[in-house]
Image 1: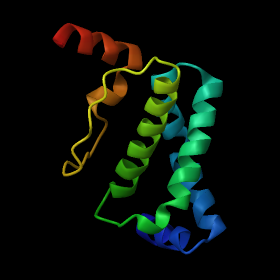
Image 2: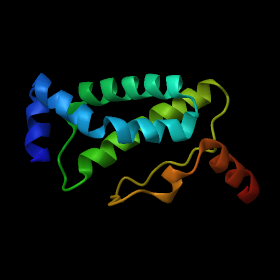
Image 3: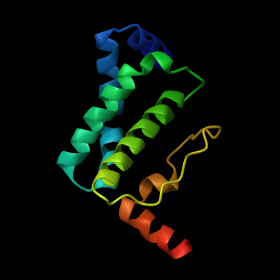
Length: 124
């Protein structure tokens, strides 16, 4: 079912885009909030991230279950990190391995940006 909605969204169907936002919006907002700690900033990042995702939806290829969610998470995490970098609060950047597919929440996603930064200082 999700694949059909994504295909419709790729074809510019506004209702399908809205369904995707409604389905993933809250989870992605919470993801952004873990990084920036401020609701207003998280909302801005969420908006920019979904705009970027929807404008790049044509390049997205369905590769199995959860592939859209993983792709969307990557966009929103990158947006969050860019926001922090602009404020000189970015933790050590580690590029994700694109060959790995997440089937659940990653433990690093549960950590705050400050916690990731602290870990990077201790291990560095």
